[in-house]
Each structure stands twice: as C-alpha cells, then as structure tokens.
Length: 173
Image 1 (cartoon, rainbow, N blue to C red):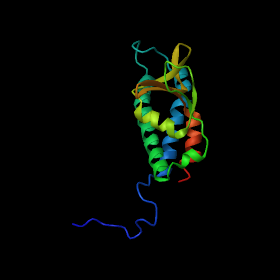
Image 2: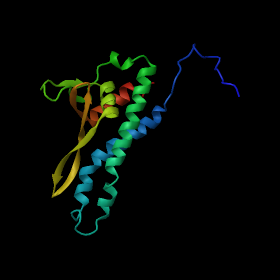
Image 3: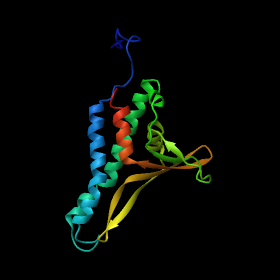
Image 4: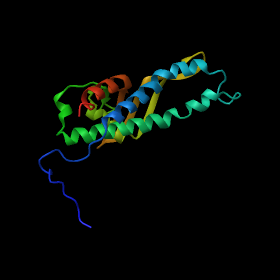
C-alpha cells in the first residue's frame, strides 16, 4: 500500500477539520443540562434514598454528560485554534476567571483558548449548586482545578459565556 498525498497539500490548510455543526449541537446539550436543572429540581418528589423518583434516575447522567461535552468542545476548539495559527488571540473573549496560583488572590479573565486548556487539563471539576424546596440544582458555572508547574490553579467557567464565545469564535471556521 502507498500513502496518499493530496495534490493540494501545502496549498490549502491541513490537519483536522472538525464538524462545527456538531459542536453547536453539543453546546446546545451542555446549556440545556444547566438551564433545565432547576426545573428538574422542582419535579423531584423524594429525597435520594427515600423511595423511588424517576427524575433522580434521569439526573444521574448529568455529571458524565457534562464531562463528555466539555472535553469534546474543548478539544475541537483547540484543534481549530491551532490549525488557524491561534486566531482566537486576535479577538478578546471572556469565559470566566482564573486564579493562576491559589495562594495568590490575583484573578484574571479566562479567555476561550485558556478555558479549553483548563477543561482538558483539570485534575478536579466541581459544579456549583443551589437549592429549591430542599432539592439541589446546578448553577451555570463550574470550578476547574489543576496544577501548572509548581502552581495550583483554580478556574471558574461561566457556561453561558463559554457557549457565546464558542459560537462566535469556533463556529466560524
């Protein structure tokens, strides 16, 4: 067998070309998990361990699905930004905040590329929760924790801002 070399190689962009239409669908799913969470909490009639409530069973998939969606979206965005020579740097974006050293109170704006980096390299992910009628629900932001060099970092990712910035920057490629 022979390796195929595209005659356009070197003339057109190379590398992966993720389907950004799929990314839009995944953003939609991510947003709906967070935005529907409070309404799910209103539907719950029992507490965990106190009788059967089908909505608890449905909510069991939230955490795994949030992780799957965030990783898929972050990898897709990074592939596109790398292929396009870090074009995201040309446009300011704000997806949350980052504390690059948890022992230093300085907080910086978390741009889209850095948000994707933090999603990919997070050692710990925590959702933010609130309560209604004794039932918990997700607020639309998450905390990411990790380590870079000698510093432990903490980022707060605003899911709604992340979705807006993602559509603006990623889905145009």
